[in-house]
Length: 231
Image (cartoon, rainbow, N blue to C red; front, side, top):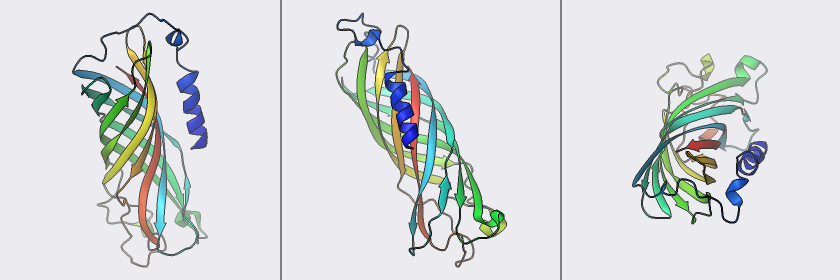
């Protein structure tokens, strides 16, 4: 997570064509871009998901091996005033995590790969500063509901058969920041966002004494997004 954050900071300040944007009196691009009531766009990006566990008893933790996934989606924005915008950002998010359960001798029992394909429906409020030449910082936050297409919630098999089950619907809150860059033909926006599930996602095994899930009181997703928006 630390390396991902540093990578994104580098993209924000080094990887965009911003030299001309910070001149004292730059030529203003897209002067009327933010004056329309409705704006549209799309985003591409990366994600890294983790899990937060709550345990019934203080024992050895479940280990999580994280990977980099991808994001893609659309943007619909409604202007409220000069500083506030309401945004819908429906998107497709893919990621894979590997769980390592303690207390097992065989790898087939200890390891569970959790592949998740989320259809995410966020409702966000974007709070911006005044525009400085051709750039404008902002904060963004809100709530979202995610449909996990790889949840296995309805599967009859559980961990005893090698199937890790999660609930289909996940409810989250999201917080982030970014900078709008007004280029000659479009607005380009790199941003960082944290995603935090507020609902328990775990579907317990059929056996109440399951060595995989009996000690887990709750399981919640934590994630970080790096998005690149084009409007």
